[in-house]
Length: 212
Ligand SMILES: NC(=O)c1ccc[n+]([C@@H]2O[C@H](COP(=O)([O-])OP(=O)(O)OC[C@H]3O[C@@H](n4cnc5c(N)ncnc54)[C@H](OP(=O)(O)O)[C@@H]3O)[C@@H](O)[C@H]2O)c1
Image (tube, rainbow, N blue to C red; front, side):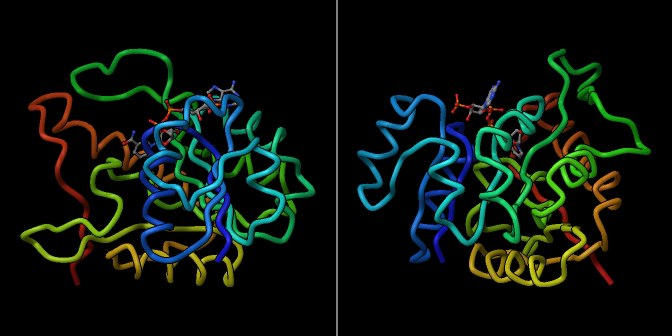
């Protein structure tokens, strides 16, 4: 697949390298290409361009920018470049404020998630929430003593979720599909839960698993 990764932070770089490792073509999008010069040197097969470059020619888009900037980054990418494509939303709506007793603050409410707002504004794109509830160090083929971890996903478009499930298979995850976009109200706060052991005990190496 041709994959466009919007972002230049740790999540964007980790996922972009993961896609390259699994044989996909990758274009990373940023406002400042210099931020990705080291990544580009380490990943010569990858391409670096603008948000619009990354979205334009690709079959799967990954949104991995600061939560507050998600809509701006997508506007720069261009709604027409997103239409009809799966957009993996790895972002979290974290406030610019320190955690309280290890608990992050969000700028959304439990009755309206970040991804619902994005889906409403960019109605032609097929958003799929994924990769938001685990740290970047554990995103690509993580090894846990407890076995394969579970990635909770959701979104309105079945084919888009199938594409993302295939990626998750490659990246060493089992997928738990929680339904339509409104389920992001439950999946986004998993980030808060995931971070608590980190902030309280500096333990950042874990993932969720759904048992049945
Ligand atoms: N860090 C983790 O382990 C982790 C795990 C799961 C989910 N997440 C979520 O993944 C997302 C990315 O996290 P991160 O830690 O890799 O990076 P980050 O520091 O949260 O975000 C950096 C990115 O945000 C973009 N950005 C910032 N302000 C912008 C603006 N005004 N307009 C457009 N773009 C803007 C930057 O674009 P430029 O490249 O143009 O500067 C850069 O690509 C976040 O939403 C985070 O909550 C993080």
